[in-house]
Image (cartoon, rainbow, N blue to C red; front, top):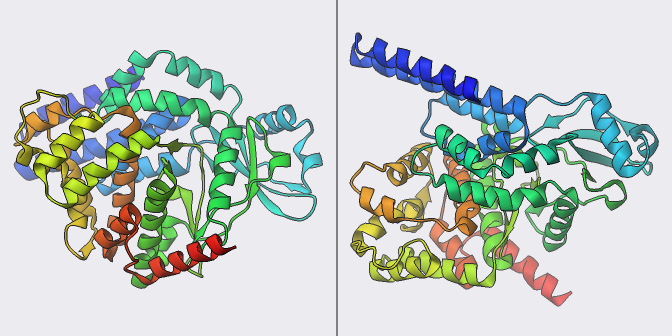
Length: 441
């Protein structure tokens, strides 16, 4: 990491010196090239490191909308396509966890992984009864490596601050990472969360969750139903505008329904965790980073949203003080607080709104501009660690909706889940009918 920092520092110094001798247009080109090279360098290094450092890189991937497209692509590769471990290492983990070699446990086992990420990689296999399954195998030793990383939190604070924007609360994010990754390292927790989501959405009209295969799962191996389908990039390239609108609403409804109806949500909303099907359904993958909100945490969240939607500045400040976002005695003008923190809610003010990449970039830039007109408000804000992953979901989802150019009655849909108002779209009515059937079953 020190070598990486040194390389980036030298490159930045060269860019600044060179920029003084050229015109504004060339200077902008040099700075864009610096951003791209930095993103590629950081993604490559973190991809090789695996563990906590790579997880941090994935967690900041949702704040890249303001970067050049090539830099965004570098971080996207970090989320979806990183170097795998050797087949023999993966097979030994299976033996240690499940008691036998993959060739004896499965009718067919592909030693070449189909995906590799920060903690483990996924292999395609076939069960003895013919079911096609995905087998996620944890990298050997990664659990101890991550625990060692997390035991040195101060190093992680500095590392994370060096590679993200200055307005992000590095301490809060790292503290939440430490709390969540203990569960993520034990695939039994993920299996339980995935099974709970699968049961929760059983028979749902547009949400699918793969079933877990418990007899082929353990602490470092997780086997679940194999799912075919288009990836997010394939959907963007080949899907029709109508399909993009439909998918945008499905993603939004899954996030809001999970949070407001079940107080539990998947904190890893990057594009690699979805598969899209011709019948309009969407499969949701990877439940290793699930956050459960306590009743008290959720009760403190709802008034904040309601007061932003209602443009009630004094009420918003009181709600933020109760939730811990603002400390007593801050002395801030409530109207300035409202204008500052309402950026993520612009889409929920009009009856209809179209998300765009520019919206996500501009909204995030305003919240991260610590030298801008609302610097005093940003300096006073203190995000409680329990809300960090929710913030990540908000921005990750907004980024995907922006890339889909999704237009809908977002305010009406949000209020459906917040306060149980009648559904405002066909998908909402289909979901409401599904709930009624389940209650009557």
